[in-house]
Image (cartoon, rainbow over all chains, first blue to last red; front, side):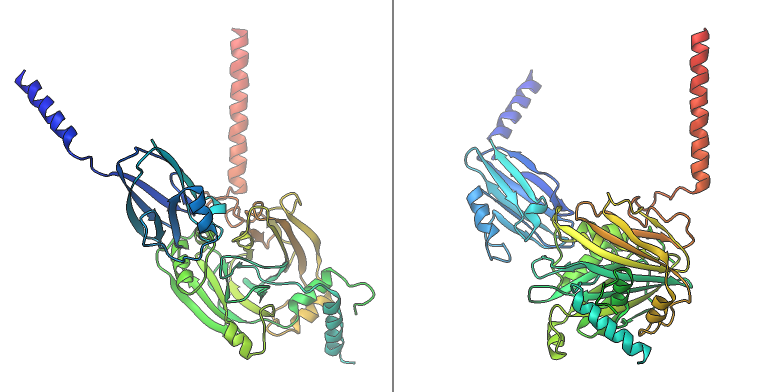
Length: 127
Length: 339
C-alpha cells in the first residue's frame, strides 16, 4: 500500500515538471529529407536536429506557403538569424528549437536552386 | 594541292554547313547549378591497352564561371590539348555533307579523402585529376567554386563506387578573355588512360537536369576490331548505333595526322553511338569489351559494385540448376498424381 502511494506521488510530481523539449531528428541524404512528414504536439518546444550527409549545402526552412513563395525568389544566401530558417553546410549538423502555439500545418523545404523540384519537401503537422 | 590543305578546306566547309556542336562528356555545372549544353561529342579510341579520350569543353550560354566533372575509368598517364580536327573529322565521316562537302578496377573502395593526382592548364581550362569518394570529391569541388546541383551527391557516389577517379575542368573566364576566347569556344582535351577496356561515362550527362530534360550526345568509338557494348543499342533506351563498320583508311590517315593522334592504328572498327533521350532514362554508362565478348554490367551501371558479373560458366551452372529443379518438381508432381 505504501509502495503504491509512493509511486503515485512520484507520477504526480513528474507530471508537474515542465516537459523537456521533444526532439525530431532529420537526416539529409542525396538531397532528400529522411522524414517527409513530422507530427508534433502544439504548444510544446520541439528541438529539430538536422544532419546534412551530403557534400553540398542544404536548407531547412519551415513556414506557410506564403513564406516559401518569398524564399523561392529570395536572394538571402545563408540563413542563420531566424530559428525557422536553417542553412546546413555540407557534412554538418544544425539544431533549432521551435514552439507551434496552435494546431497548424507547415511545410519545410530547401530553396537552393533545383532542390525543391528534386524533392526536398516535407510537411509538419502540429496537433 | 597538298592533302592536308585540301582536308583543312573541306573541314572548314563542313563546319560552315553543320550546326556547330558543343562537346564534352561531363556534367556541366553553372553558377546556379544550371546547365546549358548542346549536343556533346566524344571520341574514345582504344589501342594497345590504352584509352584515348578526346572531348572538347564548350560552355554554351550564361556568364560567370563554369566547370565540369568527368568520371574516368583509371588514372590518366597524360592530359593534353587535343588535336584540332579529330572530333569534326569523325562527324564528317559519319554524317557526310551532301554537295558542299569536300585497366579498370570497377567496384573500388570508397575513400573519405581526396587526392590531387594531376594538375594542368589547357588554354582557359584548369584541369585537375582527383581520386576520392563521392563526398570527398564533392567537398573538393564545392571548395573550388563548383556549384553542384541537387543530384550531385548521388551521382558522385555512383561513380566513385565504380572508379574513384574524376577530372575536374574549370573554365577560367579571365584567361579566356586574355586569349581572345569567349564562353562558347571549344577547347579539345586528350586524356590518355591505361585501362583493360574503354569506358565512357554517360549518366553524368544528366547531372543537374530535370527528369524530362533532353540529353543528346554522340560517342565515336574506335577499336581494333568490332567490340561488344553494354547497354545494347536498342533505341528504346535512348541509345542507337547509326554507324558501325570498319574504319576507312582515309579516316584513319586523317585522324593520325592530327596532333597527338599518331597512335591511331592502320586498321580499326568505328562505332558511332548516339544518345537521344531524357535525363530520367539516362541511368547507364557505356561499357565496352574490345574482345567482343561480355562487357561489365557494373561498368555499364546496370549492377552495383560487389554484385559479381555472371560469367558464362556461372550462367550455365545456374541454368542447369534451374532445369534440375524443374525436373524434380515435375517428377514429384507425377508421384503425387500416381499416388
